[in-house]
Image (cartoon, rainbow, N blue to C red; front, side, top):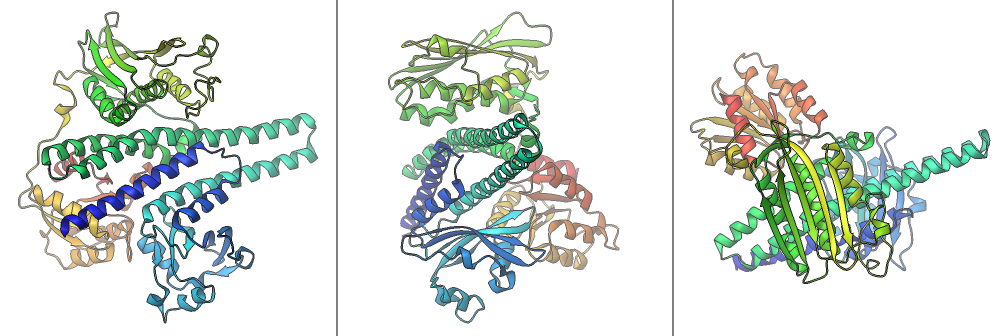
Length: 583
């Protein structure tokens, strides 16, 4: 029976992941210049087979909500005109659920009979609903909901992904509307040339939005495909422990790459400024190539291609570079090669170390070659221009945005290198990236030298402050395996009370989540630092949170914390950080 439950759970998770991938693919393939918020609501209505999909925005200053977008099933009467000034108080505890639980679900209205929400929902013939909030820096600014969903109502991750996409879409639409209004004002105050300039600026902003959405969808789909593919394989071979372990290792590599991309997407200050800083550190070129193979292997197999990786005259394997950017360059070139190579073709990645580098440096050619359809000679000179795609019957059916090579060229330029291309129609294409990289001083065998042996914290006592039960379970298991004796507090207030009542030497360290009900991690830290006992008030406190922006780290230090560990947890990094703090 347990195996059946396990398989049912795996199947449900795979179905939801497939729906998320389909949703992202569909979003990337559309022209985003239209009313795309309405399109997404309609798509969600169909996926969940709901009567109504809607967005409410909240003004906490006035205490009012407003229905700003709505989709209705055929035959269902629209309500948006009657929902333009609704007091927050009418929702009962609905909005509080968003702040504490991150969602509000009601699968049967009779389950909430007798509550303030019941008469409001019953009057509108709402028998069930699912909804997720729009949260900006912990502030509730609105929510996305569906009334009477008949299918997939348990798939809240898909709804959360859609909510993130929709809120970005709403912001872009507001910016576009503001640009149009500004352009209209320019008509009254400036001559015809000034009007043309304003309209051109609005059009450029819209193109920039489209480029951003398409680029992120393109970059995210590659590791997502590897994760979904190897998850399916693991589910199919669940009894083969060795094989499942191998699949999980490959899922970990792709997940790490996906997380790096998501971190860049969420770092809005860097995106808005147009600046991406290189973060150079020691890296093994062999590991880079191994990771590349893992990420693209699922696509290679599904496209029925031959794939080869080799190195020539490699003397200096360890270099100093931005591994994420180098990986991104090679992935873009690989994705391009796979896309334009028919089944039975060959894709080759070769790294050649050249002898002409200055002292302390090494020069490399990264060559990505395919036996695909090739390019027209006239198009080759434009291949690195944004939005450029060759128009021909051969490539018209191949999906793409024309941004990949432009992004690759910019990254190569940032790394001080060059990129060139040779192509012949019907024979294939070869891209060569030439980079000169600093040689790492370490002579050890690659990034495995950076791996941290399992720490022994036997006898050390630790207070884990975390409100999420799953996160508690994961952290307690990891910490207990290294010898920690772990106590758990469900929120900041409980942690402060435990510290007030505890003996001086009760705990060696506190791991503190940030966003929690009752009392957040910042306030809890400030109160612990204010304790009269000099030993308790100076206990090391580390933030362990999904709030991973630079400003979040600064807030943690300003509150009195000694360090910051970002979720998802990088276990070796966490153990190194704990060892440093305790030593």
